[in-house]
Image (cartoon, helix red, strand yellow):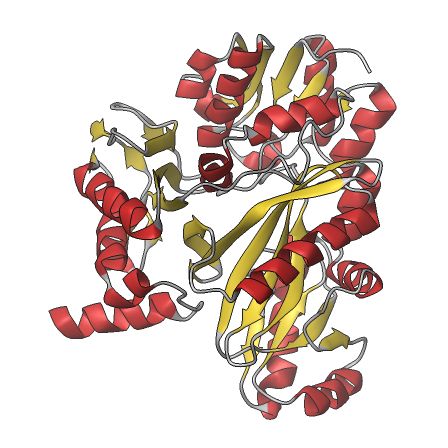
Length: 454
């Protein structure tokens, strides 16, 4: 395959800036595909060239597959990097790229389809001898009732084509199941164009642990360790770290091996993440899903491995295959990341768009900040509220945590509300400091803080 010399970056915000910086280091020209709202953004200034692909609303710009591919062809780009979100996991974009002779920096369309359908992904996991949460498909209300009785409560109704907590409802009483099915199906249909749902047993105390994998597309796959993403609110990750603290070494080894087996089953191409739910009470883990793209939290893995994941994505897309061996992967120290969002903790974390009048991001030994926000930047109401990611790396978890606490305290944003106060509270909390929190941590933390300030 020919070398990639020009890439169309089909995304915005911090991930667009992140991709452009790696391309610069590799001597690759970048063209940013930007909406009207992002024409004057930091990524637009960093790119070699920026083209406008439509109005601010994503449905009229960043989500238009034909427009994105035509833009790539129009500027003679050799490849498209979709980043995360938007079209990054749309098989239609990967397929149109294949048809038009544009390199898609990511997995194949068939692989995206295989993991995008949650029921099919469960079947692939079972075929790869990877444990799955007890559950299954439900076609009728009667079938759902029958399966729910076998699973017991609590249970989850989940969207087949879903993600990010949309189309997901918890059921604590069997009599509530019909209403939950209706709500989840309606939400899934509106969000994903697929109203199908399925049931899974709800793990009362679970940890969200994911394995970073890279595959060459010919069956060879390696892992770059695991990340703990259990600090979540409404199924949205807030703090991520590697290695996962307080995880039994036998579980850690088996999770990593399971992630590799799943990706090998697909002959996966590029960077991806296999996500698992660790049942704290049973010392067991289950396959959740695979994200067939670069993850928001990839910097913590880069910090402990020294591997540029975007650079590896590009190399694999060029046909270079895996440039790393499993034995050659070295995990050094600990890294923790906080997602800084434009949202107001005092108003139930509602998004807080607006203009940032002043901002100062932290710096120092072991600190990395990925952001597209600077003084004067606008935060439009049309997109995700992520402003920045503050990452701290240290020789061990206490050192990384101390650096991160100092960095969060030093960050200053004026003009819009942010979740910086939440992160300060979370990082100082004794439960978090002990390590190994489950996904119920944020609810407990907020309840403690409300009592303290009530």
